[in-house]
Image 1 (cartoon, one colour):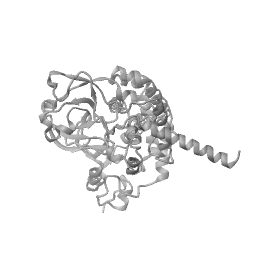
Image 2 (cartoon, helix red, strand yellow; image 1 turned 120 degrees about the vertical axis):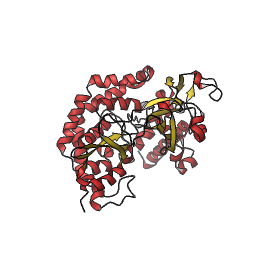
Image 3 (cartoon, one colour; image 1 turned 90 degrees about the horizontal axis):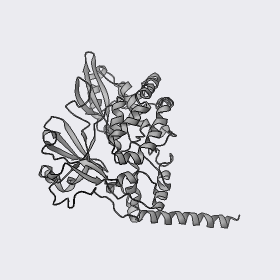
Image 4 (tube, one colour; image 1 turned 30 degrees about the vertical axis):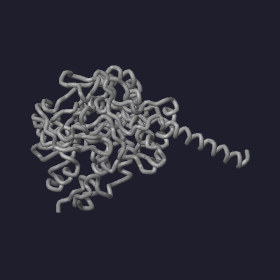
Length: 428
């Protein structure tokens, strides 16, 4: 075959790909949408206090024809558009009455931090994601914003609820999320328009002055940067629960949660007769069971493109992408035996019957859509978790100490040794 014919063939293939790509992105020009209500005729005029629940689907923005599924993946599109029943909550009665503290949220999630009359601090985290801040200018110019918008379909809208149930079985601390619908109401005040008539995860705020965990003698639940400051103060009187952290990180691998950077964690500080122990609390489970399919997502998740974007498959084929500076910082001094012990622990805690029963927290129609595939992948990962644990340990050891402050700790004045690892803080 001549070079000319090869070039023509390549040009035709590339042209066909971009035509298909543009065609697939044109199925919707929506960037963001609220949930679709079925048993409510007009959300703006109805008295939601006449109802105790609402029938809705999270969104129909991810519906796709066969071409779009080929180019951008099947993902969890059916779960996003499935009809479910969700309880309605009013902030003046929820947990004895909620007081809004502040608006929060990251690049995609709208959230409100609130304090209940029960003394606990809670968060409302939007189930529907707003990807507008994440769309690069060049994609706007090329009219390809839908590539970013549609990427959320790889997240399961009910992931956090299942992850919490599994975490309970795995003896991993979590924030106890539950799905609720929040109508427009006076208690929302200035946030009524933005946050009213929307679907949320209601959960404990990760940091808290009140103990929401099952452990006793917890003095406070704090962020990582505050934990570092506390370590500087208490020195050898404070250590992390390395067994709990290794177990939590291996659990992340079983459920396919690749997004575990530093700000996804809090620490329950427990006082004992011989000092203090910090037990990790995992927050934000949006990316558990992250399902990447299709031509474009598969390119993006290639280890040479975005190494951290790891798909939830039956096997973990690139462990390096799952190791964060967070892991090196807290686990570089941890013995290999701890990784092996906690892997075996998870295999005992998450037997088939425990994994299977966890899906009872999902609506029946959601289970029919996705339970079989997710369950099969989790069982395979659990079976191989000892091998993954050893790989995890070896990569941490190979990469060594951290050389830059962790995310969120950039403003702390830390010694070179303490920047490197948590247990490297020395008495001055």
